[in-house]
Each structure stands twice: as C-alpha cells, then as structure tokens.
Length: 203
Image (cartoon, rainbow, N blue to C red; front, side, top):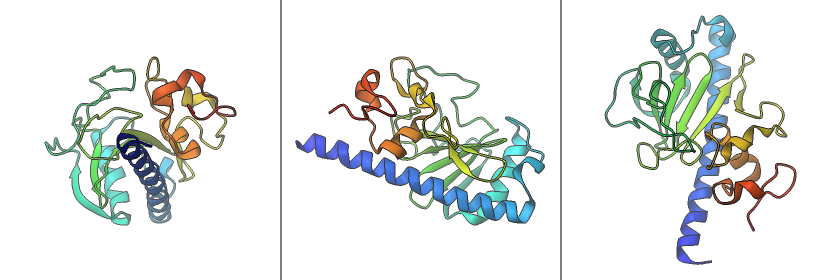
C-alpha cells in the first residue's frame, strides 16, 4: 500500500472509531438523562426550536466529557455552513450557526450538534474541511426509549437507507450505518457496485 493509501486507511479507521465512541457515549448520556427526567418524548421538545435545543443540551451535557459548550449561540470557532454529500447546501438545515442546534465539543475534539426533538450530528474533525454529510459529518437518531440509533437503519441494519450515501445522487444522511457496520467508506468510490447484503467493498 502506498503512503497516501496508508493515510486514507488510517483516517477511515479513525472515523469508524469516533462514530462508535459517539454512539456509546450518547447512549449512556441519554440513559442517565432519561433516568433523571423521564422519557424524551415527555420533555416537550419541539422541532427546530431554540428553547427545545437548550433543554436537550443542558440535560445531556452533565453526562458527557466536553471541552467546550457553545449552547445555541453563533460560535465562530465551530463548524458553520456545510454541504450534503451530493454538494447541495440548504440554508434552513445545513448551517450549524442556526440557533436550533445546541453545540458541544467533546474531549476528543469532535463537535456535536443536537437538533430537537431527537437528532444529533457529529463532525468528527471539528471545523476542519470538508464539512460534508457522509464524509466528516454524520447523523444519529435518539429514539423515545433512549437508544441512540444509526439513522436509516434503526433496529434493522438491512434497511436501504444507506443508499443515500451515493455521492452522485444521495444526501448522505445515513452513512454512519454503512461506516460502522461495514467498517469502510467505499461508498465514496464505488457506491453503484455495493449492496448491503452483497458486495461491501470496491476491491
């Protein structure tokens, strides 16, 4: 393997490790918060609402190891505008400076953006580029029972939601599922050749 190939392989392994760590970390945090405040669906969270984002962030952060808490503010040192995997920018969604995202930086440097009522986005390398969903930004879903799931698969890893990870046509929302189950990011190179229950690598 060439030096560039080794570097790419190392970065992908880092991505896999960080995503698994985020899922475990937030699963534990959500469980602790649910034990204290009751089920999340009783918290009165409203979609894309600043006050709801503050409730979500304030109730979860005591159970997280964080370097920085930006809250719902417009923090210049956090990821700002980002793009979907197919290159699209949607100003009402793909801008973390919006006040319905509660922003935290974890101890490992990853940035987390909590969006009420039940989603979290993680930028595994902070505000460094490329800032693209499915490349360095990934989404998780917090279910009513407190589990932190991989969006697009939920309890069923055979879901076709990962097909959004085709960079030619997909928005990239559900790529955490592929990365964590298949332990590669080959959808960036040969998505048309891959199948969840079939070929899972470009090789």
